[in-house]
Image 1: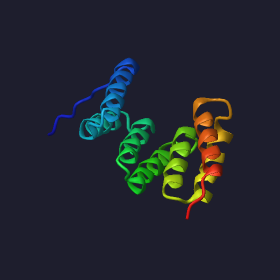
Image 2: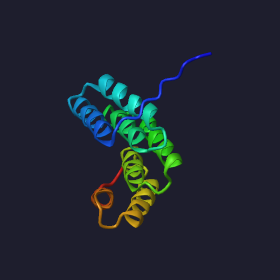
Image 3: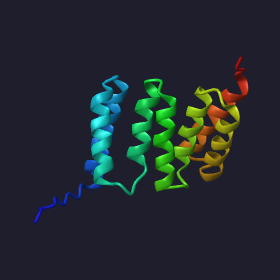
Length: 134
């Protein structure tokens, strides 16, 4: 018989871990950020945020397709995640597909019209409107 660990971190502990991962990501220590976000994903598989943050690591490395995979997986966990839609739109925009990008921005805005995810989507949609791809 195998023993299983039962770890139930508090909300504060999860926030601390995620913040540490963001610091590593922003410091361009992508391997450490991936380790942390992957660990948090294992601890709370029913929450989309660790998956979104894994996507942001790939996005910062310029791997937009891989980032989209994380954002899409986050949306499987929570189809109403405005944050996942905003980031997915951003990844499509950086892959030069304004139509798909704007569709996700509009969804993010409809889900979170006055919140931070909606504001992010609005700014990205404005950026999308101002760029022309050759």
